[in-house]
Length: 252
Image 1 (cartoon, rainbow, N blue to C red):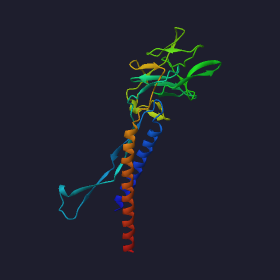
Image 2 (cartoon, helix red, strand yellow):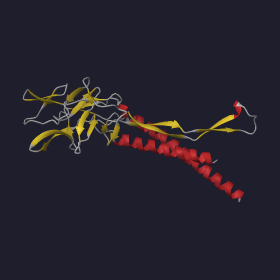
Image 3 (cartoon, rainbow, N blue to C red):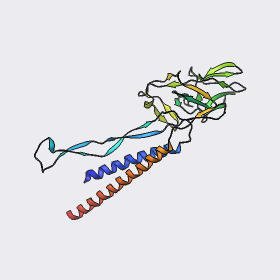
């Protein structure tokens, strides 16, 4: 009976994690470059028990589980739809790859969100994210924006008045699923992802943005399933608690 109490509690905790992840996906369904997350489950440990009714033997071994626990929260890197905005500093990646951003403390992050802007720094203009991180070029340096604006080719080459002034870098990883998520649309490399490598297959589309790859229909379906599973675990927990209370009363 105590085992059922534990299994129900573990189930509720796991479903709460999935509900939180679904809520995050829905909240970012309109965020450019956002990649949906999903919760994967696995069985908890099993214990072997024997029934006194049968003689000892292989058929007498029964297995009692401890419920399901969260195995991982994975990110789905499927391509989102690309929408034209007409803005000079909006960029979408068609295919694989990430933009690289350098934060205020020198940390390098990677993103699929190409909603950039021209921001002043030391009396010059630089290409940055909306929150101020520098966009990096193929050489890993920051990108200066000349007067008069820029035109960007599909390979990321930046032109100003038909003169080449730089190139936006695209980077990829051996195992993108190994990236560590920091914020809603930012990622950092880890030992599991492998180091960032220059990407040559993806193309950059100026005046466009990649939309979130969240499917609201799928998220709402999963939300209903998770709510029902949570309610079932809650009912099992309440029933077990009542039975334990009754057993204690009878014992005393």
